[in-house]
Amino acid sequence: MVKAPIIKEGYTFIAIALLAAFLVGFTVSPYWAVVPGILAIFFAFFFRNPKREIPTDTSLIVSPADGTVMGIVEVDDDDFVNEPCNKVIIFLSVFDVHINRSPIAGKIKLQQYTCGRFIPAYKDDVGFENERHTIGIENENIRVIVTQIAGILARRIVSWVTLDDILQKGERYGLIKFASCTELVIPKSVEIVVQKGEKVKGGETVIGRINK
Image (cartoon, rainbow, N blue to C red):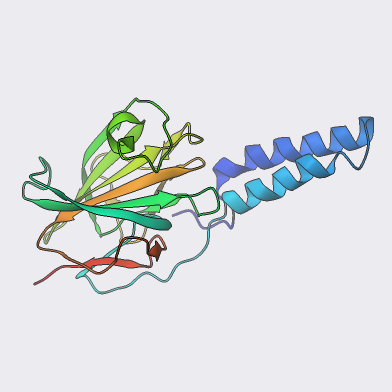
């Protein structure tokens, strides 16, 4: 599991911005170096990797991402979950942490990457038209699907996992670079405890409760 305060994918962006600040300050003016300097600070902020308190109760499903719940919609019958579901849609602004976390403990039994467009992540069709990466996770109690969706600024989805990998609840498994959207598909039997418009934190905020 990644434990550094800034994830490794951010180092290149930060280094380039700092190099630009040095070159601009040396060849043009120290005043102009402020712009790439601020950009370096933004990249350090964007690629931050905060610690989270993960709920240990096995009946709780946690948020796969930081952001705002943009909607909760019904899904008639998902092929992987194989029963009627609800889909929780989470929008991530550029100010949110963009690391994705596993909503449950389990094994990855489905993985699919789909090329697509880069329309704004808050649009209704974003989950169907944009670049996205989907994983299906299962354990002895439940199957869920998490989809990372690229936005108008997010041009690359990063995954640190593959099929048959075992994830702990709240474990970091991927990243979407810049504004994006994450979708969580769970069975209708799960009691959803968040509402549209609510702010959530990946790995920490409880999205739903499995009714045993």
